[in-house]
Amino acid sequence: MSRKHFLGILLFLLTTWVVQAQETERQYLSGTGLGSTVTWQFRVSEGRNSGRWSKIEVPSQWELQGFGEYTYGRWYKKPGVKNPSMEEGTYKRSFRVPRNWQGQNIRLWFDGVMTDTEVLVNGQSAGPVHQGGFYRFSYDVTELLKYGSSNQIEVRVKKHSDNRTVNAAERKADWWLFGGIYRPVWLEAKPATHIERLAVDAQADGTLKLDVYLKGVTEEGYLGIEVEPLQKKDTLFEETTVVFVQFKEGASTLHSTSRWEDICPWTPESPNLYQLRVYLCDKNTNPRHFVDTRIGFRTIDFRPRDGIYLNGTKLVMKGINRHSFHPDGGRTTNKELSIQDVKLIKEMNMNAVRSHYPPDEHFLNACDSLGLLYIDELAGWQNAYDTPTGTRLVREMLTRDVNHPCIVLWSNGNEGGWNTAVDSLFRTYDPQKRHVIHPWADFDELDTHHYPAYLTGVARFTNGYKVFMPAEFMHGQYDQGHGAGLEDFWARYTAHPLFAGGFMWAYSDEAVRRSDRGGALDSEDYNAPDGILGPFREKEGSYYSVREVWSPIHIEPLMITPSFRGDFRVSNRYLFTNLGACSMRWRVLHCTSP
Image (tube, rainbow, N blue to C red; front, side, top):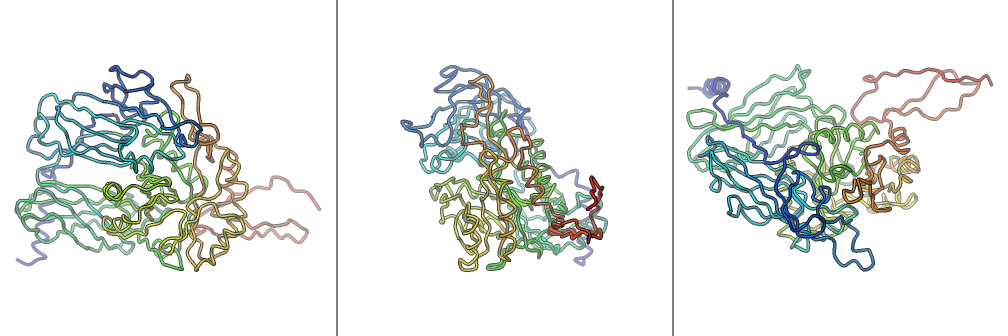
């Protein structure tokens, strides 16, 4: 049989028998975010409502639910304060697992817990204590569950870590310190033989490099791939299935390269997305498991002494620093809030975002679909994780985030919070080999110096001719900095060919609604009101000035004199969009004869 004929038969089988393939099943043990919670039993060791069993909503932070004590991350700078609040919380709930899950692989996932987390299922340990508050982690609980009957889960959480480097990296920081299960918790069921995860490098020319990680393979089989545009306007692209060569018994990782014609590349101005579906088939070509993920075809590369390029176009990032935060939920947010934030950021004519830790995944999804560039950062405010901890957390961060097209750079820590021993791990888990930065350092040919002065900031371009991209500039405390000087700074910076953009501090004020003060908002004096927007995303003065300064369509200043003939000089500051795709409306508001 010819290979072409064989592939045609396999394509037919995949199409016909797709209903036989099992999708990963998910069962939430919590709600999905702010406004969607599930009640668990709870007890806290110290502070408000401590020492007795009560109820708490999950996900949340226990301070906002009336337990423990509030602490701001600059506690160590206050005279007489030796330690922050150090409560421990215990969560319990019962749940049922479907009987038909027996014989499958079941993992228990936590999307984010602050911070040390010990998990017991039916009285037995699920695995090692997890340390690190901003990362997704899981346990294999297949052998711990009772199928078709009631199960018990107990989660013990320490707000302050037993690992001093975790406290130094995450708790000595300019933000509110909370405790608890603040992101969702769920169970996942997959066949015993299954696809564990994917790592994708989808390039702008249609090349798709794919790493597929398998578990439980006991016989030879096949993989199939489908790619389908999510935007149906992509009419040139023809859906195709590529079938790879047979894999062998015991296979754990497969690497493949294919080429897809007539794709539309992803940019922040045209965020074209595709659905990638990977099938795992047995030796008789029966599909047994499949995994979906959204991808964008785009090529990101850093060119020393030149710039950061996306699809061959040099980037100038108009960026903002943003934390996952809301007064009513603290760090517990939701998909709707993420979409709102991305829309507001784009309304200010920004095209890039940075945070000091991995955000909720629904924020990355919104950046992918609506179009924002993102710098994904391993936490480390001004101190680094030890190497064993950092090694584990880099893996957790990248295996979750690696396939998002919005991510153009990785960041290892902040302002001294980097551990150089883990730099190489970013390339280990990222087939795209995206560049790694150390914010506030001149590191690996990319200078990210923070808060450069008006005159000396531009002088940094002569520091060895490095690409310059301040990861923080224009501090906005009480909104006194964002709009006031941006135009002057930006004119100086963009006049230099080695400028790659910058990220202002910060997106929104981080005031929390205090449950111990009758719901009053608290921004910890002068520490947290740094935003262009208010805590509930109120548009303050700089919202409008930044929006104007960073407008992609710029009309040059012009004096209206008797020589005026009705012509205006217009410049295009988009990166990828031709002004032919834009329209303009105008009207004369006032006209005075000279």
